[in-house]
Image (cartoon, rainbow, N blue to C red; front, side, top):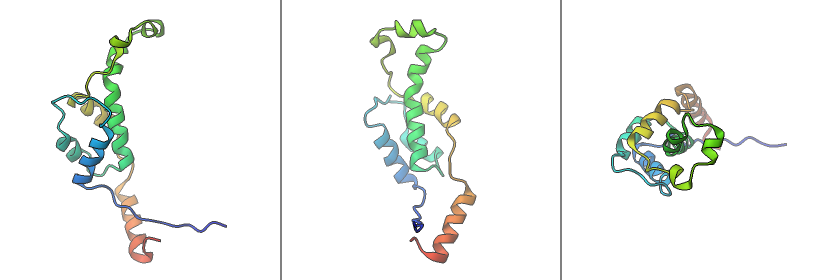
Length: 122
């Protein structure tokens, strides 16, 4: 049989969120208007996985705009230069933040903190 082991890892704080956002964007060209501090402020309560989803969604928004309204054949016939990724802009983050919600509720946090207080992390 398996014994359940619980390890409580709190949600990332402001500085941790900034660093996680930077890590997620290290392979992506980022426009000069992107304010990582603002994105980190607006993602209070987001998990590391949630932040990854925000960054991934934001990085795909430029391509989505280029193929919007085109047929499958038109998209296939587009040159690589036409669909090459534009730098991720702040407007891309605005759109991503409107779509990607946090996955951890306050009730979840309280439940885990209660468990941790009562039984410890393992």
